[in-house]
Image (cartoon, rainbow, N blue to C red; front, side, top):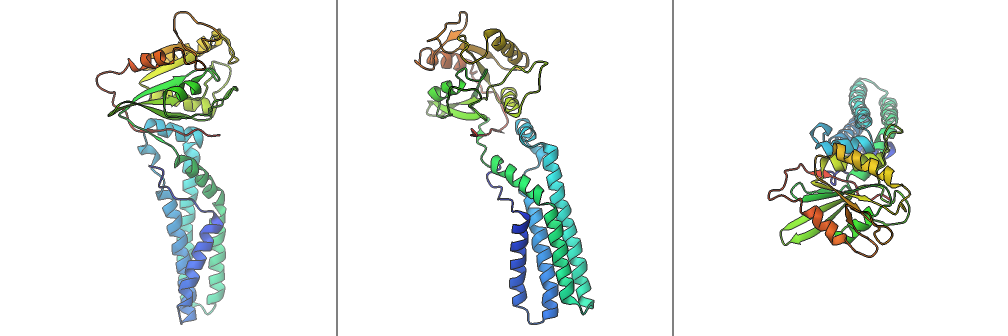
Length: 325
């Protein structure tokens, strides 16, 4: 969907390519007066077509699945994206109108060269006014085109919990994903997708969310936390919530329990609670595991897989961001 979006050029790049293309056409003309007019028309057409193609290379936001639409809004803001497209569309229209008007004027004027210079200056001014929009869209393109796809037909396990409780370590042990794992909070900067082959024709997906904090009434969630919530809401078939009873993650158990209750309040799928770091502390009443020793990891995986029904829940195709360093 997004891997085919081409690089969005800067204003100078658009103008440079358009001028060079027009100059090549001009060299082939014997009638210099006519050549000046055609130069302006060629620049006008090249700039207009490139700006229109930039808009058309992006998908329509209203047709996107809910998860992806929300993700775009989180990462860049849908309204900000629309404003940027509006700026590019404005420049395309005004370039076409000004170029055509001045080209027509050249047919009746002895000052063809002066009018050509005027046309070039005005078109360049218009395109330079949207340079920040072009750069913004290219930044968005560079992220969106790298988003891996989550299959709508595969059972999906979302792993959630506070930062540094062992989510990335668990994903690394049970799937093909290789998230960065380190002993500091917010190691995971985006949602990571991993897979595990169950049979020759069945595969399960794992989604490693960033650490999400219990915002409560104290603060607004940041972008990383909101990405995690989106994954929980839209793509999970089951949520594996990991807590750290040793509290080495930096959050005490009552605080972790508050986040667990919050997740349960909006989850529309089963929530399985698993305590990690059993080599340091044991938590009664739930599954216990250690991603350091491997103890209990397979049992936690099996508990999540037992939630698979005989018929997979139909889902739309959602796209998730790779790990961003």
